[in-house]
Length: 307
Image 1 (spheres, one colour):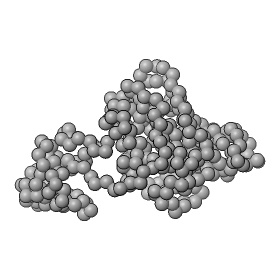
Image 2: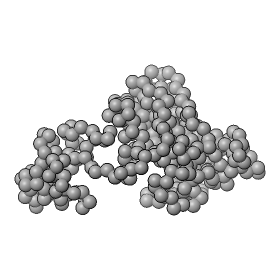
Image 3: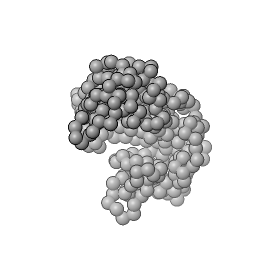
Image 4: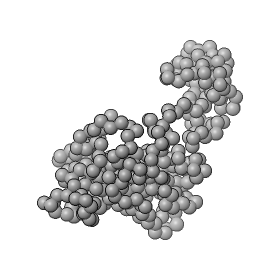
């Protein structure tokens, strides 16, 4: 594990780090300077000379590295990555609840839970770390970028374990709402049970016929809105794309879904047509103090591009 970073967080993110290899027979030294090692170690798109000239590579003791500094083995080097210009995701992140242990937010569609890929600043974690002044804020579960609604976060790393254990034990009751077509011949409520598998690198997950059940969702029709149905979804498991696949399998795919039934070519920064899926309610017994907890989304279906 690296030592404590000498660089403060930037945009709510800690510094990245790399480490030079140990000097031994298995790792013969091929670099005379730290500049040579950094150019060899980091991807081509990283402008190492410019970052060295600006003093943006820092050793574990806080000293800015220079191009011609002699190579040193087993040295941790910290730096902040350059971020792309990200269009701001429309919609407000509502703080539904905040105490010393938990922050519960209601996120809009198209906002990532965590910083990854092309979405760094435009993520719940980065936004709320800055807005709330909580540098250790971290999610206790995930929502897809295109899914809206309730997300629970721990204020500090020390509070993560008991709440994550509650999620792992399925002691957290989650309820979603979805807008989807009506099927007069569909008998509801119904419980969908099947086996869902998602291969790494594939956009879509799939149902595997005959495999042991690993996904279960109760589906109920709540009301009709403009010729569509508002469905209450109560999952007992949390497989990737589970709700989207289960409604698709019932012949009522969720409105606005860019992946099901077919993958649509939608630009990553196109916010016009949100997926009509909302994490509407979360309930559990607090694993720290034993108190009942229940939180509800402030949003309602249908969601708009400015939700």
